[in-house]
Amino acid sequence: MKILVLAHNHPDLHPGGTETVACELARAYRKSGHQCLFVGATNHLHREPHPGTSFQAISDSGDELLMWAGHFDRFNMSQVDLRAFVPDMQALLENFRPDVVHIHHLLLFGVELPVLIRRVLPDARIVMTLHDYYPICANDGVLMLSPDEPCAALSGSGLCRCLPDAKPNDVRLRERFIKMHLGAIDQFVAPSAFLRDVYVRWGLPAEKVKLIRNGRPDVAIAPERSVVNGARNVFGYFGNLTPWKGIEVLLQAARLLIQRDVEFELRVHGAAPFQNELFVERVDQLFEETSSHVTRLGAYKVQEVPDLMASVDWVVVPSVWWENAPLVIAEARQHKRPVIASGVGGMAEAVKDGVDGLHVRRNDPSSLANVMISAAHDPQLHQKLSMQSPAPLTVEAVAEQYLQMFTGRPKAADEPAA
Image (cartoon, rainbow, N blue to C red; front, side):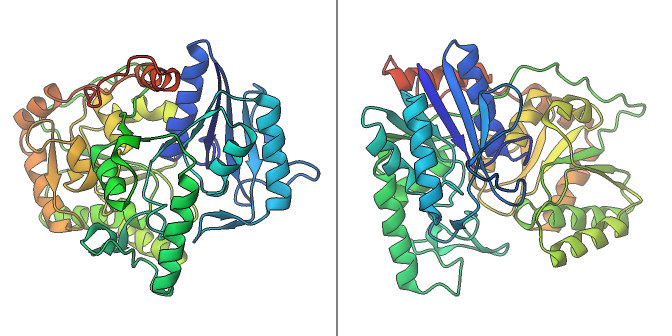
């Protein structure tokens, strides 16, 4: 079987969860004996265009490419430069002639892509994994008006108000435009039941949205951190530093712990690419104020996670938006690190409070600080949650679920073990 996998970037250029999951699945498809081509869209933030072609190499392998797509209407998720994009994408489809096109995001490619695929390859199966809420909400797909106010799309009105400058008619037309083009997709996949339910409420047919959880490649499990007095008081943050990921909430909680004279360490792994200056200034100030107990370790690569996990006891996921299926939760479980997470969205679904992790109130530094104090002072709680933390599915097992869906063979249960 020939499979074309499309994502809105490549993990070597932007280490986001969507890009990582997409690239790992593509490699698992190849490992299963299928011919698979991965194409990641990119723009001027990572690459400049090359005259004469939209395609660029990302490695010497030949089965992973970049497609330069620098002209894109983010509000409507629309490809602007159709004269350059369409002929090159059509040539790719006609030359590779995939049996299945597995889309992981339409950013930079454009929401028109499924219709183009259907026109060029009428018999190909088109599958799209939904990783966030961008088709629903143009505010970076976070379904938040601000860290304090969820978007109205999650309320009874169903109308996204995330962009106050957009007129109501603009939002309605955007929704119709996107839904019309998504109609060319045969099957949607959601990595969490929460995200699936949001999309069904938005209007996708429930029978077309299947639940398949994300998996992780096999790695050596990080050993427990060596302790002298039994305290499990080293916390880790993993991921990009953005307003929606809650890094400010975490650093404010750390400041409260310092004020209360709590013995702890917080190790922050991740950088702040493409963030606005005001946010970066606020975060830099918080790091300076908490430097006695907080270590800023910067960007990291996915293959470094086991070594980084070895130095922490707990993993904190303080996101203020309605996360779908954070990769870091699966990574923490792989290494038997209990997770402290905001009790909303896919985080509340993935982490069972008091069973295999702990919940905190979203966007509440005081709540987070109190839970971190309890965690640091209770080694038995750490041991209990660690022992009860289920291992994530392997990426090979997840790839097999997709392959069964692609070929129409008997399907796995909709609720695989987490």
